[in-house]
Length: 149
Image 1: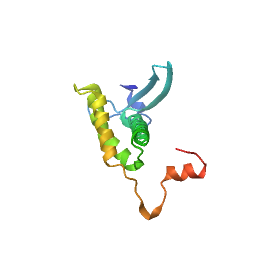
Image 2 (image 1 turned 45 degrees about the vertical axis):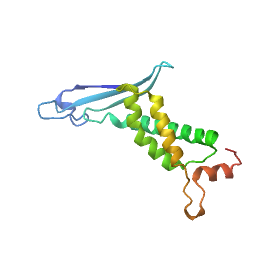
Image 3 (image 1 turned 30 degrees about the vertical axis):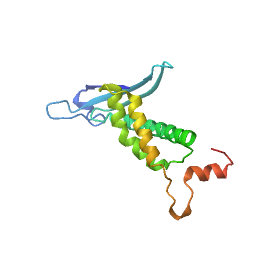
Image 4 (image 1 turned 90 degrees about the vertical axis):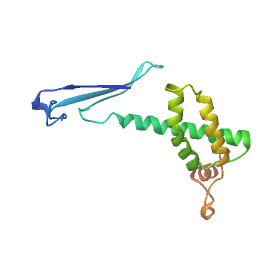
């Protein structure tokens, strides 16, 4: 995923507003997402020049949190025969994302050691909430549709 922006003539300022001041009053930003594995374009967005690049980054973050949360809960269930609260686990994963990113791109620490520490924390805080004897969404879903975990 990458983006580029460029200035436009001032007559386009009503459609593609820019930063103004010393910069042009009109600019456009093009954001492109390309999947290297499939070789396909995933998204192409044309927006005004001062738009934030962090829109799709939030989607990536949500996907990472959901995926890591699922794997942590699955491993805990398979290895320790324990159930972890989905909300607690997702919260811990969000906290650990900065450490995981640092391990992948900027430190000498191995990402597996960060994920191992995360798993240990999830294991230590694994208890499900039992408020008002209500089932969680996922347990209710599995019961309703006769799926086994």
